[in-house]
Length: 119
Length: 107
Image (cartoon, rainbow over all chains, first blue to last red; front, side, top):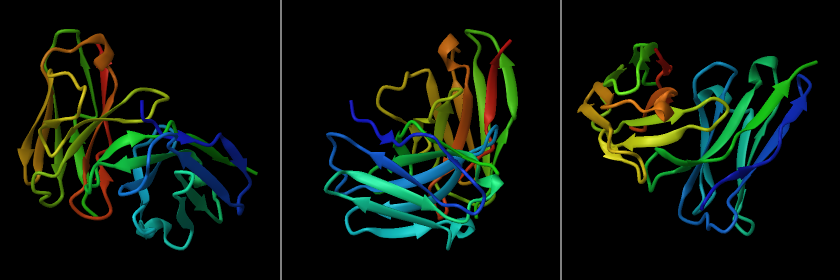
């Protein structure tokens, strides 16, 4: 069964950076979009950004502009999300999710990565 | 950004009940709307997209309707595994945005 596998939980100090990976073993990323979203504890879902895996073009949410970078390594079917200048309110579960066809519905999700920002 | 507002925020129901959740967009999203189910500690699961198209493997007791700014998710006969939080989402314009969620609890 196709699934996305994310890296493990992280604990970071304020001001640090975190890089989360998302891999699809046995599944070719080519021709799809991959999104990153997050969910703070007890809160709803927030979209962060997207990468077009055909050419690497990215688009980020305005809230995250300048702090987030999404990259991909198509040779390993892995997508990365790096968030810089972490604050306590960045504490959340971060998800990668595949875009359905060329649409921005999310049909396949990673299991989530908890990032805790605490001094 | 398009704001998505769900109602109710929470609802209590019994197995076998029919439940309807509504979602209103702050501006028209055509028929581009999805519904997700999320259980505690798990990633969301896509149930319905394009307002009424069931994702593969989703039981037929789930249905969606609406257009423009007003949409509904209906569960025709609640099963024990349906107790979860439900989110609507619009992909029509960037950024994709979600409703705040509706928690469906056992009565």
